[in-house]
Length: 103
Length: 361
Image (cartoon, rainbow over all chains, first blue to last red; front, side):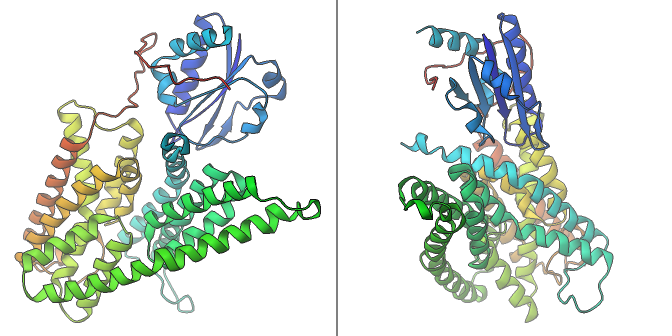
């Protein structure tokens, strides 16, 4: 499964990046790939390319605040969660997504 | 229904955009004050570098309500919310409604614009005018007038009523007067209630009455000090009460508090308003009551810890300040709940999380 996503937290200096790392690591451990864009206070980093978005199976938006560029994911399968959830249980979340997608 | 409105997400977006502004403005005022600067009243006269720093910071503080309001409106209504949101923040400043008024204005205009964009149908030739003229003009006009006449007018009434009430009280009970002044000054961190107390104290200072000014100075410092104390307590007893984000904000709020800038507490109060405001008001009220009944006066209207030596009784002032801050700190420590979003950085450790709400759209 190809996962892409966006991470953004309130202060935009810590949780954003922890969330990104958690998703990427959990995805690898479960045999998936994940590319996550961060929208911190410093601005957008690792911006998703149109090709990455096109190839993705699911979009994880891990954000406590409004994210920019949401319209890029039109027509995609989107899962929206707070950053705390992916930080606490990234593997659980990905497994849950696997289940939901099988339905 | 409430959950669908995502009120918290909009407020968090506002805090996210406001933080760099409040930190920069606060530190500029602090540096300026420390180097002896004053707000520039008349730009046609000469002014010093410290004066310029203080003024820059004060201008930045004036941006708080507009930034909050615009960010909330943006979070709700996307790009069309930004312009009209800025207007609502300016109205909040002018009618003296402070950051709470800015939040309210942002929510009102954000939802209004969202509704307008969805339901207002215009002929094809006018579609280009929708984002440029129709939506911003209609929303700013309608919600703006609502802010002026429905929200602004009661604030003016309340301000007048409070001022005459305080004037009547001033002669009778000193402790009670101090309690009310202190509580008001700490209530909304530079908002309308604080402004009433502040202007009242400044007015009395001009007449040579110095005690209320001391209460004002004291009550402006108790919220940042109290919040810092409750954070220290949470560390000392190893009980988590604040998220890492809140901890970072407290580390900034404390040095701002030294300079009597209460606004540093706003990011912490906006997440958990009732507990934070209650603790701050109780601590500041008791500190204010003590300062007033001990007869401490301040000849200077602002300056934080650096003007304590100028007080008529620096020792008693410091004691009242410490007692008030301790009460706020302990109270907040007791009231505050363990944050829901604490982070476990340990890898591979998964917590139990309820995924039942998750839907894939």
